Length: 149
Image 1 (cartoon, rainbow, N blue to C red):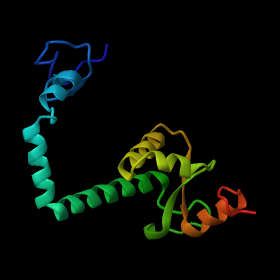
Image 2: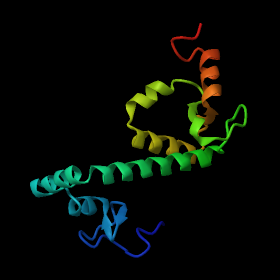
Image 3: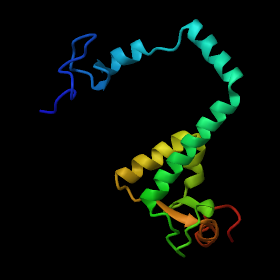
């Protein structure tokens, strides 16, 4: 039987092991209750912080995006699958079977990276890394967009 947590035998709030461990000795339910950020005071505080620190938030968001992008590229091999091009500025994540734009529209960038990362870790084989030129050539060859005739 899998242990509920490395350091705790049950939730320190409710004493249950029914829900999965989330952190700091709390089950998912108790952790989310404790970290609830829906009260008015907290919303006002968060809005004030965002208003006073837009550059810090933008910088943090950009760092997170680049970190996830690099993690994805590392898992995909850091080179174009067709031509071997390796400059990360021109590499793109491609859906092997097409239909990427439909999936892309479902998510913002952060959520999209999570979906792709989860797929890669599960070895689903849905994504590959292509340089921009190879990606557009593939789209044209497979008529994956409206302009391919």
